[in-house]
Amino acid sequence: MISATGLAKSFGGVAAVRGVDLEAGDGAITGLLGPNGAGKSTTLRMLCTVLTPDAGEAFIDGAHTAREPLEARRRLGVLTHDSGLYPHLTARENILYFAELHGMARVAREQRADELIDWLEMRAFADRRAKGSSQGQRIKTALARALVHGPRNVLLDEPTNGLDVMAVRNLRVLLRRLRDAGHCVLFSSHVMQEVSALCDVVIVLARGAVVARGTPDELRERTGCASLEDAFVQLIGSDEGLG
Image 1: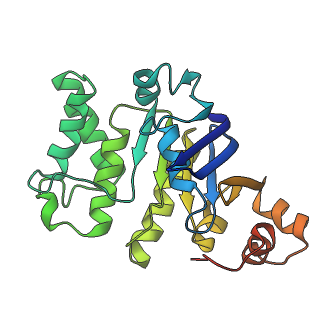
Image 2 (image 1 turned 90 degrees about the vertical axis):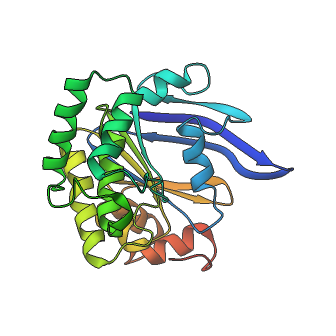
């Protein structure tokens, strides 16, 4: 479970996040939906301990992200929109390297890499260098790397950026598998169809603050709109920034 209360962050006097409260539960996909510049990525970076909040606090399965950052990181797998793979390592070597960084013993990390390669259907490219991989293959490798230490919580920052239609469909399947296995999945997006297709709960951000939360059906009912896109436009008070 991921939770936060009153998260706030400013850069050079400009408030990027203003008192964000959120909760993402186990066995569910929770989406942060908002236009570009709404504060989604800044919020996620505070949750994964890359940024320290100016105010507020966050917890990853009870571990305080500011007071216990190492413990919070152990309980979290992170997939950024830039996969950041080591291009001259194979997919398997990328996974094994991160397993070693997490302190896993050699036998355990090799077994875990094999499990993830099978689970994510990576056998065809597992022993090829990441440099020549497709974007979809890179996303699978980065996701395997994020899951190698067995975190209960998975955080993804705009994971479908740059993916073609088939890669997006495959990623949807993988995220649903994680949810069905009991993981807490939290991801940010400004792409309406992704949020509508995947999310059990949606948290809508605008101008650095939460303006609405609920299931897609609840947001449509609240606004009286037939589509989530129309509901979103009404909730944020603008038609700018739609993906």
